[in-house]
Image (cartoon, rainbow, N blue to C red; front, side, top):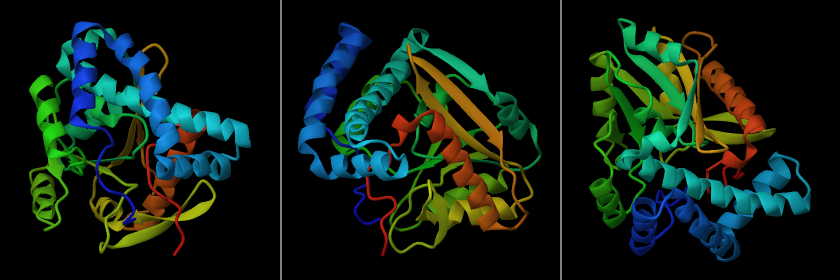
Length: 289
């Protein structure tokens, strides 16, 4: 997975333009500009284009023409999720609608007298969930990579409201491990993304969309050993600025990380069956040694 750079595409100037459009002209104006920007990346970001094309062609079994069309559409939808994240966090949440599918599972997790574990993936737009879930009895800690470049991150922080979740940033010195264990000891809720790993960490092999791939072992080893329910949580974008939250209880054998991983990959397959465009892992996920 060394090919993944851990950073989002785009420049500070580009973000400033989109933020200006969102705040002063409207969200639809930002979408209109995005149509052209997405086409630029589709043409000239050849590595990413090749990877996503192969996802549609080999994993989704689509025709050549449909794979090319959906490669562009994937770029566009990903851009929409970024625009939506900024707009919602900047106070425009009333421009969106939201559907709660399994939210009671998260509320129950917040009431349990133990740490709450959620596992998500780089599909959909989980970061917007915090603005619709309301307040819980426990804090939610999202384990994430610090993907934005420093200048872009500073720019986004200046226009976005204070997040309702705490972020645990994955660091090279592995200090985030202490933050994870502290969260668990304090019996708060923690959310992992289970579909990206960094070099030199332990992995588990699983099957996703008919092909073997590597997954980070940590979230599955930890979650399978704790005596607490585990939820698979996704937030998927639908038409007309509508977001759909899915929160499902994981079915797996206790203390069996591979069983939990298998349940996880099956849940992602079900989500991608309904939302094939919203696969946002822009590296060679199924790369073979």
